[in-house]
Amino acid sequence: MTGWRDEARERAWRTYIEASVRLQTRLDECLQHDTGLSLIDYHVLLLLSEANDQRLRMGELAGRLVFSPSRLTYQVSSMEKRGLVLRERTPEDRRGTRAVLTAAGLHALRAAWPPHSRAIHDLFLDDLDDDEVECLGRIFSRVGARLGG
Image (cartoon, helix red, strand yellow):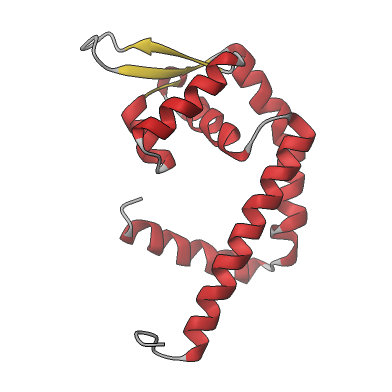
């Protein structure tokens, strides 16, 4: 295969991509089983809980999730029907829309944290030593910065 400097890099890439997809799938399955939330639901709730006034403009939320506007609209609509979030017009320009965390959404996030944290440790963190965790943090900080994250 052209473009690969060596087999070790290709093997590292393939191992990463396959393991990361499996990890996200398993975390999603565990979260849905334990709480009824998807991993995406959880991420939306987490981002909103950390935002000022627990509100984010839809465009900013889409950017943070790396979602298209239409995908975010679908996601937020689904969560709105379940009472986890609501949408409101932005008071500054009345054209923009913000996603807002509801009390039920905050409650769902807080209830989901213990089983989700357990799954993260069981499926990922407990197999790593402190140096490996530090190394992964450095690697993905650098990759995220390169990608504009």
